[in-house]
Image (cartoon, rainbow, N blue to C red; front, side, top):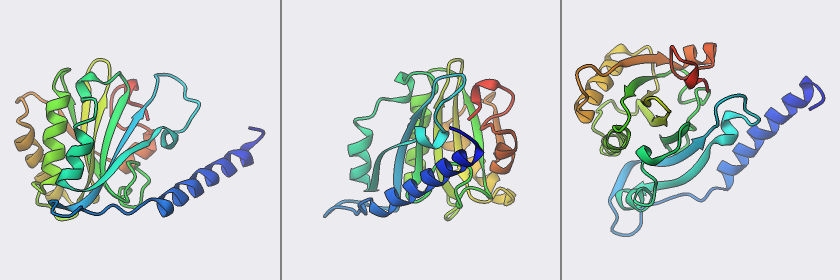
Length: 214
């Protein structure tokens, strides 16, 4: 890369490639007799090695599949490696289709996320519980839920639930209470809310540790 203008051109090229990918992607619909979900969802996977990275966060995101029905979800999910068995610095992202799991996405940029730090060994159960709650519309907050992420790290795992409007404290409180219920969390579990604006400022998804830099 010769200069800063090359970097800008590369960023523009990545954005154009993303738009082209979305435009050419086949629209997913429920099959005959299948149980239709209220929203279409896409599942993503990413993995990064610790330390300096040669590729961007967005380049690491790989779409695993998209589904519009309960049956399509299980056909993808049943073949996935469970979070407890993933290598460190791996992430699953389940988001409504059309929303990329990035702070800067139009659907996310005014929002934030509840962050739950999990002891090792709890990730698979908690991930399944949260995504089934999302698909089953258990949060009862309209279209506020954007998606969820499970981040596998070396000393602990991180579960997060993203919503559209960080300033709506009534909704964020309701999401928190639903998370506590569906996850059946131990009383001493650490939960915190972080806006995506703050994440963009410090370039970190989570607070207080260098391991969670994006």
